[in-house]
Length: 93
Image 1 (cartoon, rainbow, N blue to C red):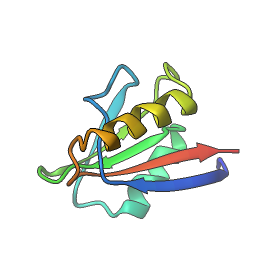
Image 2 (image 1 turned 30 degrees about the vertical axis):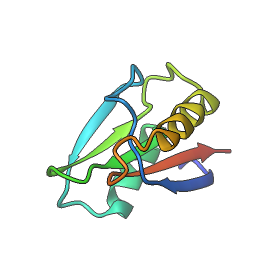
Image 3 (image 1 turned 60 degrees about the horizontal axis):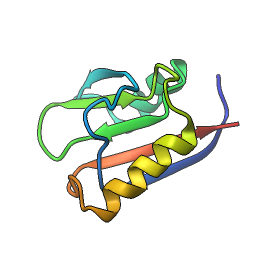
Image 4 (image 1 turned 180 degrees about the vertical axis):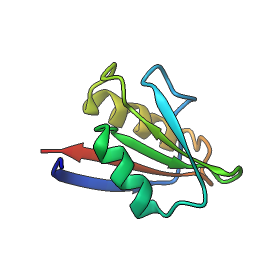
């Protein structure tokens, strides 16, 4: 199993899958269960929208670096983009 270096929570979302790829999981799963699935595929983002019945695991295509995704998240925070959604950014060792 991959080792996580950092697991940071934000009140925002990415803009769709933003070209980084995504998988959906039922909202019946806990954050811990979704995190385990995210780690299996080395995803960098978990999102729980403020509405809907899904978790989204994003950053599975290696199309963007951790730094690129972090900058995108920081921009969305400044713009108050989907501030009621919850996002977790994962950085691996």
